[in-house]
Length: 146
Image (cartoon, rainbow, N blue to C red; front, side, top):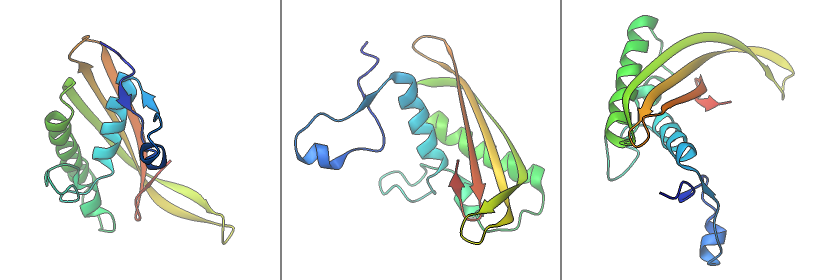
């Protein structure tokens, strides 16, 4: 199997329209890119697959009454989508935590506090039985990533 046959994101549409080669990535990077897209996509945003994405966006500006319940719900949402749409992995586990972090606002030169969701996703690559790990942090309200 050619491990460098996957398109790298973001796609370079200018190169595509000029019929030039576009960047590719390896197998593992492709899995990571797909998981990142799942994390940052709202349910219903993908026209053909309304269940692609996660519930994170549904709660972006909402008050979270019980953090443990919210984490369990988000973990379940993310796990369900990864199981369905990232079929190169099995035995998927999603660990999350939320913490508050001070962020320097460059415009106002002041600190503000944002909620930071840290997500660690692990699984086993079906083809090779190698462990796969993915880690991403998302700032909520409004959602962004670092």
